[in-house]
Length: 74
Image (cartoon, rainbow, N blue to C red; front, side, top):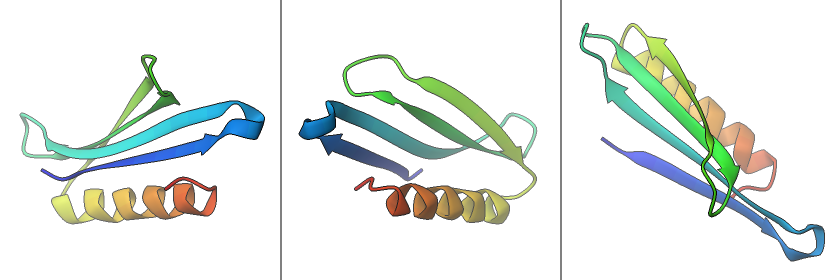
């Protein structure tokens, strides 16, 4: 599985954040998009979205990644 790890660091604003996206299979034949975000070096918030197929999970992952890239994550 491919995971995407994005970071946003701005020393002027004391901002050090991460955003992680990962796709994992479930036990019931579906696919989960696991999103985790927070401050670098600390435990993050985790949200799981379940999708019926790998294709829809990939699309959701791409949309989340594009949104975060627009916000300054790299």
